[in-house]
Image (tube, rainbow, N blue to C red; front, side):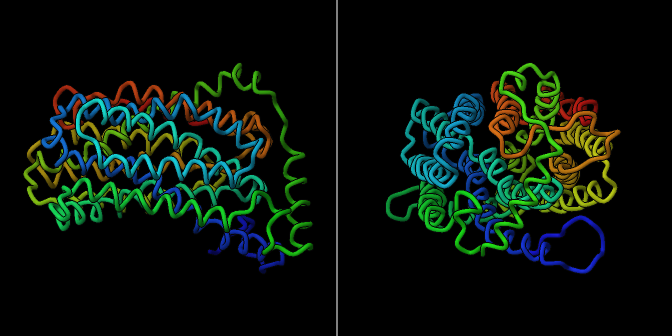
Length: 424
């Protein structure tokens, strides 16, 4: 997988070849792993179309179950990443993938409200720390000036899992319904959970904890990488965890991120229900139509992140899509019964809510008043966890809201707007 260096159209050097080699070795596996992690958040929306009747759960219970996942996530995210710094990335990722894969598979045994809520909570507990842990891990392999592209590639897993997961989930639910005495949604959890368990063993055999342990790098490449990381770290300061907790910017970013993911997850969890409410009866059609917003999100992420990097500008590239996402969500809220307009509005909202969350990397000094902690330090992990955890917790306690096309829930559109003021 090619990795641009972000320094213009100059001849390819040995250094460029090093980072292309790292990208080819790491990013495909990490992308696949995170795709299955994100799939756990997507497939519940499709399972609901069948399981809500089978186990008699209401819309409110489903909303609570969708959100309680993040409650478990936020409670254990920081401890999980602090543990990662002690035992290494490989063991941490293997532990996370084994436990969440087994729990995801166990969702096929849900039989009432209590078992549904318990397993959703445990799923969040066991998955906690995966994404921030990988972000922490990438700091071992790329200097800060080159992190934007691998970060974007890794984060593509979110919309990619939703785009692929919709058609695949509905195909399993319709094609295997009744086979072996299991319902379609039970087969879906089984076939989408087991691969995660198998991937854990692949990670254990392939992933190296650090460049020093990578057998596919020669001594010269390891030395070059060490020099690049050392040069990059000199430009950044190191902070204690207590300083991170006292930094108001952390909480400002958490609020901004909450505003973005509030609308984002409203679409993820309720899109299948919205499509059915707009007259789509075939599960297969629901799956295919649900892929449309996320295909647009992938394009938006790549276009916005590359343009943001090229212009070294972050605020407008975050604020403008956030406002557009909020406006589109408002249109979707009042377009019930009009499938083309509703789907178009949700597509624009999804694309614009995903795009600004990937505007990372270097910025002009005037748009970056304070440099973040050195990538690879424990404080950088804590910073990422603090922002992510705070946002996910707030989002979790709001997840019992009705589907965003109902008259009382149009206010979800406002969630994206304040992110404009926090995008600095």
